[in-house]
Image (cartoon, rainbow, N blue to C red; front, side):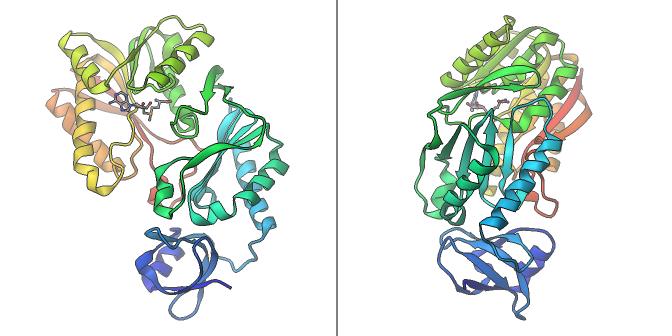
Amino acid sequence: MSKAVVNNRCSKRIRNGHLWGYKGDIKHIEACGGDVVSVYDEANNFVGKAFYSDSSEIALRFFTRKDKKTDENFWKSRIRQAISLREGLVKNSNAFRLVNAEGDLIPSLIVDYYNEVLVIQTLSQSTEKLKSTFVEILKDELKPRSIIEKNNTTVRLLENLELKEGLIYGENVEEVTINQNNLNFFVSFGTGQKTGAFLDQRENYLAARKLAKGRALDCFCFAGGFAVNIAANCHEVLAVDISETAIELAKRNAQQNNLSNISFYCSNAFDFLKDLDRAKERFDIVVLDPPAFAKNRQSLKKAIRGYKEINLRAMKILNSNGILVTCSCSHHFTEELFAETLLSAANDAKKRIHLIEKRYQSPDHPILMGMPETLYLKCFILRVFG
Ligand SMILES: C[S@@+](CC[C@H](N)C(=O)[O-])C[C@H]1O[C@@H](n2cnc3c(N)ncnc32)[C@H](O)[C@@H]1O
């Protein structure tokens, strides 16, 4: 049986609700990478069961504090719990995150559901080893049309796992249409972004829709999620993204929802915002949903400059009383730091800001209290004056 002994710092962290043990926490280990290990503290008390990685700094990913057998039935019950949670949480959509890794106590496993097509990511040595078990359970429980593996994300390199993607079950599907908030969106599995779509913004689209009016700008629009959701309430929407593939998809999404008031631009949003200000263009609502500028703590300083710049420029081009919907999906860029950066941007832009709402990722991406890493998406809605 695979076994590990960890220091007291780690056992305390796990008993407080966190799920990770680091390489340096391990006092003794008898296991191979990818094993499920029983973990004990220095006084030989059972701490929990965890996935073991022999290459990552995150060496242990705990999934239970009970000393239970972890066979196929154990994982079946975990996946069933995740499915039943979504039944109450997700409204108005046939696309949602079905398993959110640590948030659903199946660390490093992501499963997204797109209208009968499942996309799976196994992001550690253990979930990679258990992949065929998960696939069999998902087939039995959901009878999907297809299961696609999107294991091309670079976090797998930390686990010494190869990058790969492709069909693992069912018919070959390149694209599906999903319905979300009573709108249709094409999800193309070859776009290279996330598992196909940004499902974590579903409810934030609706929050933006409620406040949208007049002339709108959607920066970093990807497939047009915000633009398409707010267009019916606006007389004109401009949407910009640096990726041509994203803009093509966004155009098709506008078309299929019969929205003719959105203009799409393939451009760098930093330059686009600067040019709009120079040309004295003004808007009633601006959405900023950039990629994660801070991928780790080391890149935080540069990230703060990036977030400040786009927010300052957005505030400048808003009419007084305008709405700024501004997001950050970097876990390292905390809510407090985000608030400070927004205030600093407002002061430099000589604007006054009211906080209307602080929002997070959609509820099918559960946030585990005790594990701050599971809260990554912040969405602040501000009213900008002056
Ligand atoms: C978090 S995603 C946006 C998701 C989108 N709002 C949605 O709800 O589907 C970030 C997007 O920013 C784009 N992007 C990255 N760097 C950019 C830049 N400098 N200028 C414009 N777009 C950029 C990416 O192509 C990606 O589509």
